[in-house]
Image 1 (cartoon, rainbow, N blue to C red):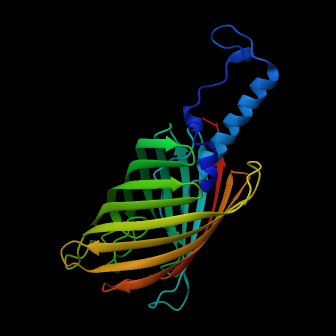
Image 2: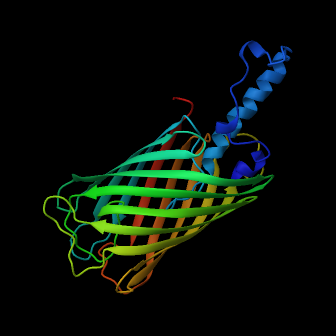
Image 3: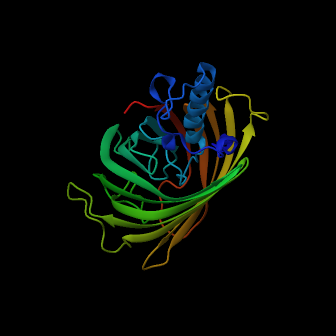
Length: 301
């Protein structure tokens, strides 16, 4: 996540042109083989390191490398006061870095809410980075994002969550600042809930619109001294996540803490816990543990 500051003097890997064929520049000058090898190594490092500015409970404004594919499995384990068993939600995702500015996610929603493990819905997430101010050891980036989702479960709470519970959509902005080994990010978005399929209409007595926000901070803990992209990275993060319903003013605020491990700059493991700090709305699953595994495949498209 946070070791990308070592390579901010270079552009993102998605912005680096392909290496000239046969080790020749456009001028016809033949570059020594060892220089070409070094250049390719630097490009590879930048490509892999640029994928590591990540948060656990929210998305940063940076994108995954262009022409790459990601596979993500998010596992949620939550206590439900209305059920005698732990609620388990599985969110598989396929992610695609279309280019240096645009990335797409296709999401699936599965859970044991009904007592058996079933598929409940699908979602599509898109993020477009429209501003970058990159400097050595720091950068600031802005992105716009949107999500459309459908879910066939019963609407059972006042909280609106279109990433696994409600049919609807969201649209918002993300700003992320990298300062050496620390990353700070702010997200705000508008969310609208619609009727769920299978006759599960959204109750007219509930507010169907919400404003959401998050404040995230992450810190690179390991390695203390950077030697190469194969080193294991460890990041610690704290995130404040909240929602205010439009119409009745009800709201909640959650605090999430997490640890993130990145292996070979390609495989990521997240462990986090989210706890409700304040709420005056009805929520069935305010607290829970999240375990995520993600793997990136570079330059496959």
